[in-house]
Image 1: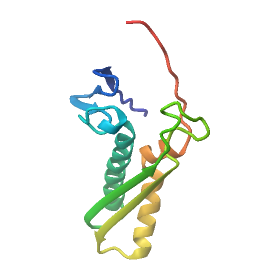
Image 2: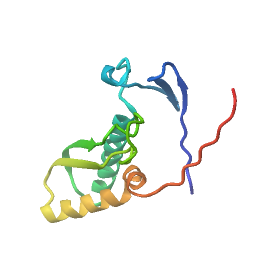
Image 3: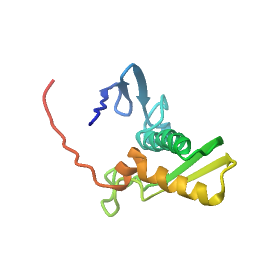
Image 4: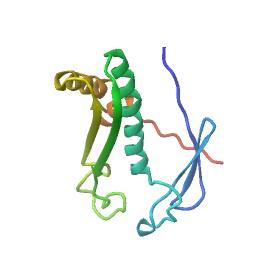
Length: 145
């Protein structure tokens, strides 16, 4: 059974958008060096945050299924991109991240072998990492207000 998720966004400034997701409001903005007011994380930071959130949820779900006790779980994610395409200065490289590195630290009584199996399952089952790693059809539609 498919489940739909959606957000609605409205531009507040050229660099900031307010996003509504269910009962939540998020501000997406750029830091001053990229023309923003720093009122929220920027879009590519939200992408990394979404990945961290997904790894957390799936990690705990899989740990429960595998009878692994997770006493602590921390997730550090770093991505590298070249802003030249975004800024219209060069079209030699893609606009998105070239590489995303995920560093997961756990405190657990599980063996290394079991944690390796756990991680493989988390990687396989995380919808956000799946969307980052695999092409997802994206359709844009334009209408007048």
